[in-house]
Amino acid sequence: MKLVYRGASYEQTPTHIEVEDLGLMGNYRGHELHFHQAKRQGAGLHDIQLHYRGAAYTAHVGN
Image (cartoon, rainbow, N blue to C red):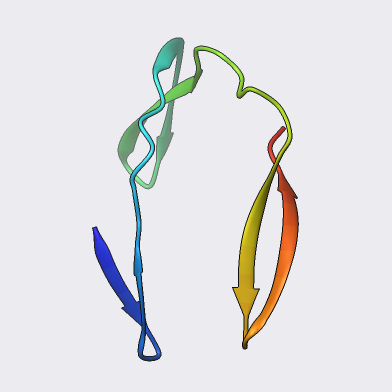
C-alpha cells in the first residue's frame, strides 16, 4: 500500500499474524469482546535502516 506523510511517499506492506481464540469473552459498553493471542512469537530482534529528517540510523526491533 502506498502512503504519503507530509509529502514523503513510502510503501507499507501489511503483516499477517495468525491468532488463536483464548475462549475469553467480555462486554464493553454493550458490545461483546473476544480475546485472542498470536499463535507464535516473532523471530527475535533484527535491525532496520530508518531515516528521520534526512538522518539515517539503525533501529533494533522485535520481541
